[in-house]
Image: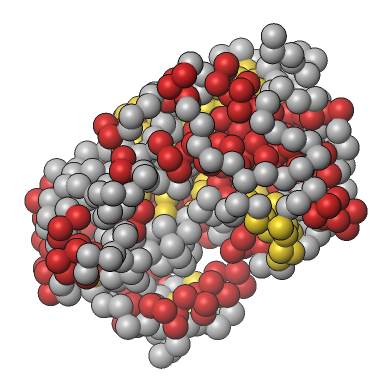
Length: 551
């Protein structure tokens, strides 16, 4: 029998005190844009002022982020979205596929038979970029304003420039030693012969040209026009295999979000090849524990969440890939009886290293927007590892992701479902999320940062749904991050007795001060107010340079 540990509430009463050190306060408004850079938030808000809806705001903010936060995304990113249109949810998978030339033999003949994955950087790490396709698809189906208007704030920022903020600058400087020799990187991202300093002006005229071309062609040029031809020329000149025909074959895919219940709410994630299912699996295990009966920041609560996350990752890393190649279905991985068996493996007094079970028996920017009509958008786009491949097409300023590094090139590896193949999508880390209750929208949210993303989803949801914390407090609370085996990182702000207690249970911990790199950053919009009246409370993570803008 499955026990439940929640009291049904018509409207959850959130606690608006914040026991954690924070530079942010929750923001209340009828229309909101929450992003990891202030200029991007204002770009989205500008669309709302012009009469646009939450989709228009999200696209404008996403385009602006390619300029304002190039350390995480660019015109060559991939993207995913979960959208509440006021009545129902829609999912969009705009992850690109492998070029037609990519096979294990392609990589082994070029780099040697010992190569286990495609390269981390360079043109042979680049799959077809999907973000521009996502913008166009969302605008065509749900937007109100002309698509070209949505690009205008980003174009203006790219042309006039902006002053580089603190967190972006830190990551820019950190990436430069590895990437400065990649084609196009120094020309576009080292304007002073080095990374910009905090407060120095950065301009990106090539990307402004690219954005104008995207605006004029409604995104078609990127996949079937001059921009596609420019990417092929750039790839061919630098030893890559990406061709205009690969770009022309791309189409964003509308999908049905996965759903799993937790404490009377329903959590939604994009289905594979992304890792969002890991959060759902972990929450399904945590349903079997009285989390609310444990001290909110204490060792028991943190320990059981860590162990559930380990179990979920063990299965995700073994089974999740392009769904066409998966041996198991998402229904099998989310089967309640299977998750109950996995939950039973958790020892509350001892950290463990878990392998995958057998279900067959039973770098990134995130933003969220909401408008006065109830439309809410959960959107994420990424170049994967910081600047991605490090390669920048020169004429249109297309900074290309390195998602191909997520493939395997070893046919003998245990996880062959993610073996590289032409037209196949790699395992993806970026995951937008959404929360509903009784078929109605509650919260649009996400936490960016590689494998921290599902871990961030779980930790913040537990704080809100088990402990009633408001989104900003849940965002500000110190986090942990599971790596491999028994190894975890914890933020330096975590209580000393909790850190010591976790160590006594066998967790191998490293206390970290670099919150951006290790613990992700989130944006949250929670629908608040009386039933039938639209209003929201939003949060933006202090681990980045972000802002909530509302009206």
